Image 1 (spheres, rainbow, N blue to C red):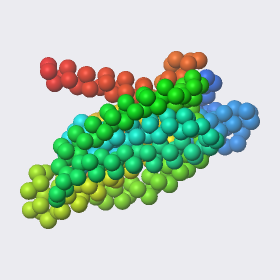
Image 2: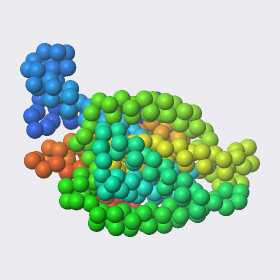
Image 3: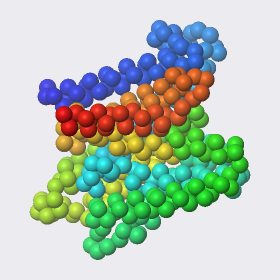
Image 4: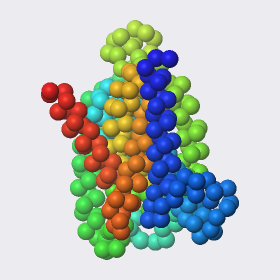
Amino acid sequence: MDGSQRNLRVLVAVLLTSALVCICLGSRSYSPAQVARLMTGAGDETQRMILLGFRLPRVLLAGLVGVGLGVSGLLMQCSLRNDLADPGMMGVSAGSSLGIMAAFVLGGVMSPWTLPAISMLCAMATVLLVCLLAHEEPAPSPTRLLLTGVAVSAAISAATLVVSLQVDRRAYAQAVAWAAGSFAKSDWNYVTALAIFLGLALPALWSLHAIMDVLRLRDDAATALGVSVPFWRMSVLLAGVGTGAASMSVVGSMAFVGLLAPHIGRRLAGPSHSRALPASALVGSTVVVVADTLGRTVFQPVEVPAGVIASALGGCYFLCLLMTSRG
């Protein structure tokens, strides 16, 4: 067994252990033995409802969102050949936030599926706008796409601030909590929908690992190997955007995880995407699960959105990495 395989197994063990600990922790804590009894139908009915109706779907949804964001970030960094790329740089976060803020301004009935649907539609519309503005023949370069995405994100963020001035205080608080990446509204419907999406998408994305390895090369080298660089770059980019948009549609903006997870995943599993993909998914899942649990337990009775905690953890990681490299 080589080092990358061993590290993947360690990541699986860390994720499972973290998930179990996070299920046990909360305003009402349980031991692993109590969790096992409650999940088998024994014990107090109220405690079982808290565990199965609230805490378990929340931890599972956090894990699934982390998987999607980790994979999304890796796909985008590969297609754009930029290790600082994440879903937010293509306007996914900005478009989602503008759509949600506009929805609160317009009012109406907000069903559990309304906000995710608006979020994903606005995110994909923003990415389409970026691609149209960056268009050039035969295909836009990674740098052109990235700069256009940053410019569009900045413009949409400004528009979001203008729209937010029209929202009443209560709706504004809800919109800000969503935009910060909150799992407070987690339920089994979201878990099921995202699990089905990722269950269908991840095998298809993993099958592209050889193409992704080639895309990391220079364009002329990739073309010499028989790869249609413009087609596959755009395909991988859109796959990353779609995965990120689907993941953030149910909880809000957590794009920073898409930057952090691939960095750690590649350091542990190596540059080959056949292993970097699962490693990024596992790291992203662990980060989001831990971030959500810290946010709902450490600062009680106040709940801090997981997106805020994840950004803080990621910032600390990159600062430590910078200080280490300088040393």
